[in-house]
Image (cartoon, rainbow, N blue to C red; front, side):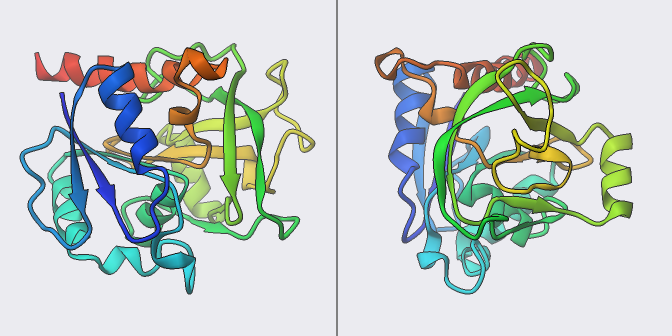
Length: 233
């Protein structure tokens, strides 16, 4: 598989994403600068975390106007696989490729810690091989991670299995106390109706190397790669 990792001014998780995809998961990776428009024939696009354009206005609101995003939107609309993490999730929502929006955390503070997630279903590339009964530990680092969508949108998302991950406690219980940022219905990750665009606030790439003592993020990233490889066969 050939992955393209987008880089904006202010991206700071791009090298984390490149390292995990290339060194841990043994995939081909190219870096795509925001002023470019050529996607270099990639099979999938990753939009990493960070503070694109300093998070001025709203997080991701300026990045959506970068030239590369025109190509990304066309790629996604033609069925191409795109996934965004943290700021990447915000950019995808701002670009209209994912429903809803990311708002300021409920406590109005930047939160950086490990949290627990639970897959809501196995009907997507990101969750196909993730145990729904297992709580996985993944770090978060964001100030605007409170997911919101109106009730009509949420109803459609529930019906289409677009809610992929919810915040939970270590035992897998989805509770208010386990929700770190006030996201509606404890939502931590979603996809579009066509299930080719994905976004999540927690950082699976930061939980993918045995050196740091946590590889739970590999459950998600390996599920994605296995599904994509199967689709290519």
